Image (tube, rainbow, N blue to C red; front, side, top):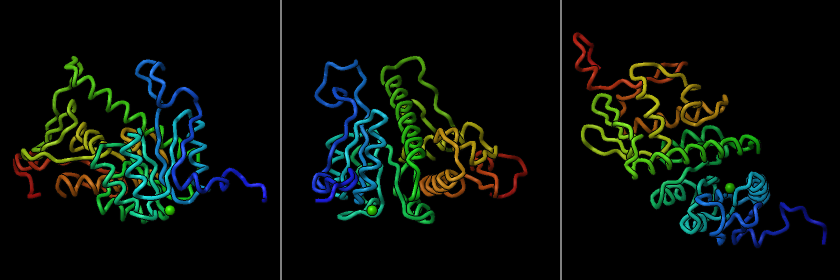
Length: 282
Ligand code: CA
């Protein structure tokens, strides 16, 4: 048999899912580890073994516990079983596709999803469908960028978890809700209501709305929103911002966020605009 590279040597194992753990003792089954510091776990869903293996090895090198599956239904099972901190999810998969996988995973338990797409315009299409991924990368991508984006998702996840813990503990840092027009954003509970109706947002959509609400009626550039919400800045990322604004509009109403072409976005609370004397009709 010809000598094989690691990318292709274990297709059978790959098909059934395999785990890369670069820190022995950091994974499951070591309750005596550092208090409260379970290993970060990443689920990689990708049906091309060479890509899956390369991604898994690179992410494992960060000290994360990585599991790969190559099939949509396996991905849903693995997400329920592993409760990963982040999911890297290819769109085109055997079984059920990445869109459906994302929906099912998110319905079960909110988790940051970085979706891998084949083309730039596919990202817009996916957002239009309301898939609910937190970030998107178009193939081919650099491993460095992948790691940066996963780290950004993890940082945000940790911040959100910390905020939730503080809120649950009734600790003093619970922040009062933000009200912009008829939109009320409960930062402690991470819940949003518009005109009294609860609107379910993904963690990323919530953070984006909060960033916009921090400066209502002020145009925020895509780059600034990217830095504040996604915690990284790259020219390719502005598409992610556009896409999530679309998702927010679909959920909260098209009138809430104004596009300033070539610049960015502004939150324009409808209730406040109506109260402005002499203000033109929206
Ligand atoms: Ca694929």
